[in-house]
Length: 118
Figure 1 (tube, one colour):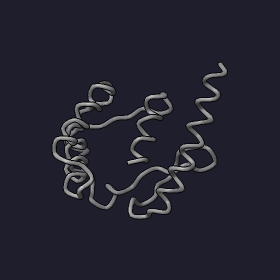
Figure 2 (cartoon, rainbow, N blue to C red):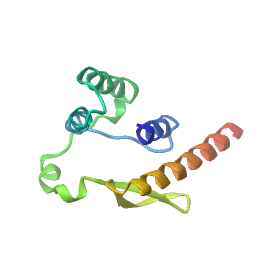
Figure 3 (cartoon, rainbow, N blue to C red):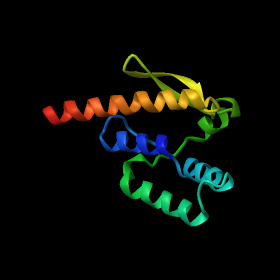
């Protein structure tokens, strides 16, 4: 899960704030298990590690927000354009994921370099 790792490292470096609910964690790990990417035991451990390393990230999602969400926008992620995170791409577009990951890795390295120089 290279993209996942990259995003968590960026959050750990305080390049952005990560937020998730228990429902999001359960849905994500359920799908990883269902798709054979993770065992049940690893899914439990993954959730535990996220909660331990990012305790401030846990949020409660208001009922009205959950009701307003549609299936159409659940597969979207942000993209990096001109050094800024903006817009969205569909998660089905694997090449776009690869471009996003490469660009994000470059941004992460630049930010680390700048942070170490200050």
